[in-house]
Length: 415
Image 1: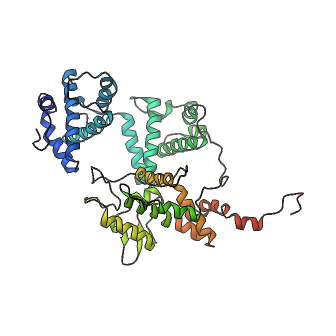
Image 2: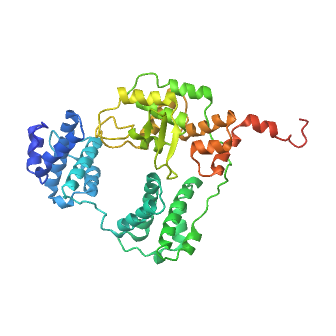
Image 3: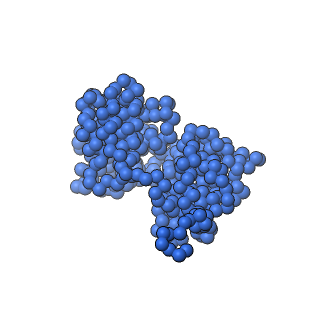
């Protein structure tokens, strides 16, 4: 029993009488390493005690503890829970506490280390992911998205059986990509792209995939058909000023937003920035392993550098994490996710009274601002790190002033 986490006598007895008893002290040490607040440690340990009480009643073995077991506890037991006082019954607390428990058990080689690790689908996904990473050099976010889609694709066709591409029909490929009626063209393109990527991977192993590739539906898509949404200079100023008011983690939110607005970074690039990427003496910032798998060095504007420096000095918590932008709640040493950037920007939109959605608006705004000041399209592509000028061409449509100068009069009009 952990001596550093004090809980009530009843939860302590539940833990001592359960199969989890040998791992309670390790669980406490795990939470302390993550620098969870003492109050959170107590709550989490009481949540584990509730789970332990249920495990004992269900006569479960340690080797059976897995995500599936936790899901069963939350979905089947919790709604009808009649366990005695003082059990914790808040779902979000239990889910978070038990996620940490699974980490501890797996680190100790106990529990169901990976419920799907021995299945044919899991092994196939591991090979596919390795190929995307090592051969094609795809970004982590792209790989995760395609792994998820292909995991669903393979499970739908094979379940826990051996994977044989010859058993997949062209009709089933088409049905999977199209999904339910009403699926958007954008979603169809993403799912179809993931399936095509997987089939190309299998073709390199000698599988015949031409018929299946031909069955992937192509959603209608006209390049450059729409105008990208952008912010005016006045709106950008209003957004930046919205960070002046105090709120939790406001320096981090402001610095991340300046990186998006001043440098035209993607959310993933902001998340991946590390302390060693900034050369303060030269006033530059390096982007390592970006979407195009290149190393790019950009000038660091003084306003951006000042915002980052203020965050590092006054708000960034002590952590072993070398990322510039880190978690402000336990576990501190784990990296933040893109959602942190997205939420910071959307909160800024709301403070401005806007209903806009999406962080990429800021990247579009960078390109639009450069175009209005006469920067050549090639230079804009370089700033945004586009591999093709075609990707940047859509921003030419935003400069309505220059477009109006070359527009022909409407047939039959006097102008």
